[in-house]
Figure 1: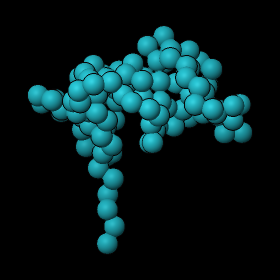
Figure 2: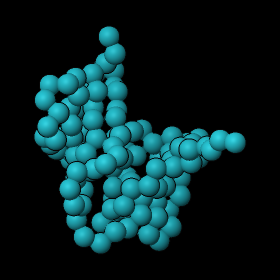
Figure 3: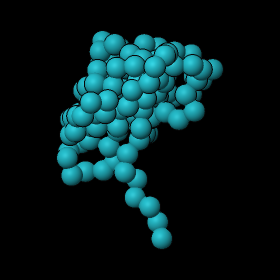
Figure 4: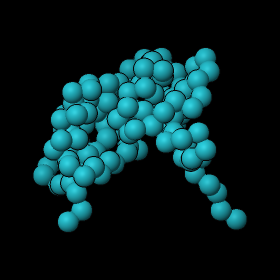
Length: 116
């Protein structure tokens, strides 16, 4: 027996705001919004989703799980995400073909170079 990947859960101080930020970043849409919970997906019938739940307090330390994005144009995508409110972070990555950014609540993610 195997499992189906249903969703990734992200805790956030402002789940609705962060869900909308990630929806815009990924080209997703909000498919469910209830008090204290917002889910985004590519479409309502397509898994996996990303579920945003509330947490009190700020993020502590480095993420142990993060998203990797591989756009057609790394430089343009990094610029777009920074314009949306992401910021550059250094997690000791060096020059490894990826740019590490943090979303508006400080969650790290990578923007990878195109495959070549």
